[in-house]
Amino acid sequence: MARLRMLEHTADVGFEVEADSLGGVFEAAAAALLRVLFEGELPRRGRRRERLALAAPDLETLMVRWLDELIYRVQTRGEVPVRTRVRLTAAPEGRRLEAELELLPFEEVRDRFAGEVKAATYHGLVVEEAEGRFRARVILDV
Amino acid sequence: MNVSFVQEDRYTFRIPRKGKMRADAVFFASKRILAHLESENYASLVQLMNVATLPGIVEPALAMPDIHWGYGFPIGGVAAFDPEAGGVVSPGGVGFDINCGVRLLASGLERRDLEPRKAWLADRLYERVPAGVGSKRRDVKLNRRSLARVLEEGAGWVVRQGWGEADDLAHIESGGRLAGADPGRVSERAYERGLPQLGTLGSGNHFLEVQYVEQVYDPEVAAAFGLREDQVTVLIHTGSRGLGHQVCQDHVQKFLQVAPKYGIELVDRQLAAAPIESPEGRAYLGAMAAAANYAFANRQLITHYVREAFEAAGFAPRDHALRVVYDLAHNNAKFETHGGRRVLVHRKGATRAFGPGAPDLPPAYAAVGQPVLVPGDMGRYSYVLVGTAGAMEKSFGSSCHGAGRVLSRARSKKQVKGRDLVRELAEAGIELRAVSRRTVAEEAPEAYKDVAEVVQVVEGAGLGRRVARLRPVIVVKG
Image 1 (cartoon, rainbow over the protein chains, first blue to last red):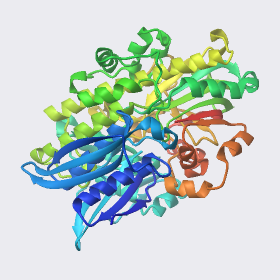
Image 2 (cartoon, rainbow over the protein chains, first blue to last red):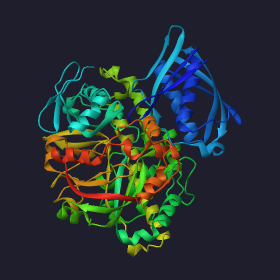
Image 3 (tube, each protein chain N blue to C red):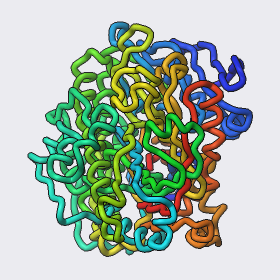
Image 4 (tube, rainbow over the protein chains, first blue to last red):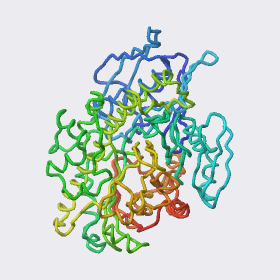
């Protein structure tokens, strides 16, 4: 079960997510990003699926790459990842993320678009395990 | 981190060097601004102190009175680095929105000319100036090759396509083109993100406003800027869009990898930096200048759309006579000479405010100093200031860039819940057109400091002087 809390930040937008697996934290972070990008509920099913693989030296960098990748999909390719399934593994370069995205055309949810996000930042960024739960805190530049 | 500072004069405060800081930090504030800083637990001052830990910083690290909590650098931060002393360049000191800035247009119209056609003009502007995602003009199409030309040539490329006038270029910071742009350092993904977005406004705090000159404080300088009371003006606030965001992302990641190689210890990873005189530093500066040129071109193309919109609203070109007063950046890093030293000045949410006789000013402004454009919130007013000799001495020729937020976006939304902001603004004589209702709630006037307070500190600290105040009549938001 994942939990999501939006954080107070004067200029930008932050969120904290918690889940019982590392993959779950990355999925919850994707859901939090959609809450920033859109108003109200989005459909839970996409029109097409796509696989995505990313690697990074550490979990924080992987989180930034993951969110930036999703921002690019929404704002440049016009596809909204309404559902994600994420698996993390060890890799020679550090950590590897494999995801399956369910994508919905932006035009179908355009009326709920709330504004652009520029990028995920490293400021105050945390991805960690504590007492068997996994947690991330992210500040987005909007 | 514990923050302690001493007051040097009415508006100037100094944080003496301590811990890993390599220089003192100085910020400018009034009592009320100081109270805002305290209410966010001095988070933005801690960020300023973090900036002061970077190698090669030239004393002091500075923050303008619109300082607020950002990521990496505080917003309102100014820091100069000496390339000869191992000084660094930090993409986090420029921001994701490279060369984000403001352009002021002055018209030949008076407020009374606008009034009968105000709503009509608001609709034409909203139609013709695309906001961003999923909205593009079909008549302006770029391909990869023409985009590379934009990255090299900036606003000049747009003017040469017939979308502007040669005189526009003479009134843009750096002539609308940063030297040293290297389109080859811009990633393919940045190109992909930039292709559909040239001539788009974006969302968040970006806007397009039609205003009138409500008050002139300095008639002589106002005349030099071509401003007079009741005159209709247009203010455009936008930047380098997804292309600039991608350039920043790409280089922050590279810099994080190489920082240890150069012995750079980072107290905040968003401050990722590399020596100016390193292959990585030079690569970023080439890509950053290319993204800056995209931003200049973006504001130039939007200017063309604004002229079209005025014409569609029934104002002939000879009547609206829209011309560029000035276009300046508030997110960039530039080589400048201060105190006889060539330094790289980072301004993140801070404006260049060069005084009379300074280099790189349009000839028309050389004798008085450059216009400094300071937007306020959408319900109140914006200011035109002029750069001063004081700014050259105290702040590496820098001043504030806006009002600065006081409420988070979430708090702002809560505060305006149940209110009809569009109607409230209409009752105050302001036509608002916006893509997103949430953006309107997040950008409500009370989310910002009163810009008059910020400007008072700027003037009191000698970083700029008031020339005119502009009152909005049409606001277009992404």
